[in-house]
Image 1: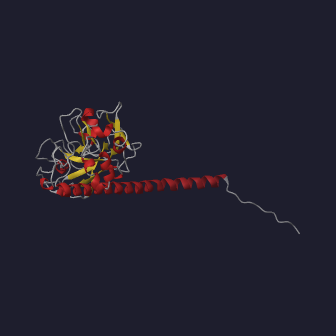
Image 2: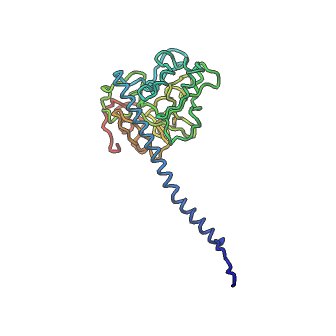
Image 3: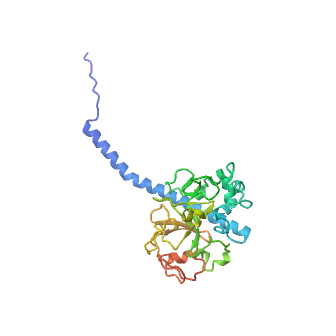
Length: 304
């Protein structure tokens, strides 16, 4: 009886190359879709963060009859103070962190010199203060806003990063300034006024910090570390006057604009093409300017 011979089939080199090419094409087609899904999820998480911040601010207002001050100023040198985002910690399920910092009974400077409790607390990453689309900062802290005036040794203490800053408006006519603002002070309407918005890291890493400010560092760790200004164009910080200050502006790593929470607690994605103009006093002509101030009396444009 003749023995049958077994033959083993295999891909030829050309067939293998064709399969690899098809897989590469499929990956090329799917990758943008996957990236879009990831960005959509990150943008939704960012919006949820701002929603929680808005709710915490309103809970603070319910308890204190005002929103917290953006930061305080004083005659002390260095002039350091807690920021608004520290004040709302107990209303954002961060009571333990608030108690560790003890901001009602000690200064930011005193907390920074407390190596056992204060410094670890100041460097705690708070999830609702971090946008998942901002992937530039490594770790929990913002090394580009070092606080050297807090009584800590050079090169200074890096505080925990935040991607959200309070709205200071055009010229301290927003919500988070040096004086407390009540809802009744928002005569333009709570649905027409920014409460807080995004601050990204970019090539120069201008993301914020949530703890507070240190004016010995100028614009890098001063009040601009906790508040943003609609006086400066979104994303670029450009003013059209030959200067750009991205460390003062609202900005995000989302494509086409940034998320904001309004004073009524709603969250909106604002296009970076919204009408903008460098305007230092009302009446304003740009929608972005009007959204920044709480009582300019302007009529919002059609791009809102």
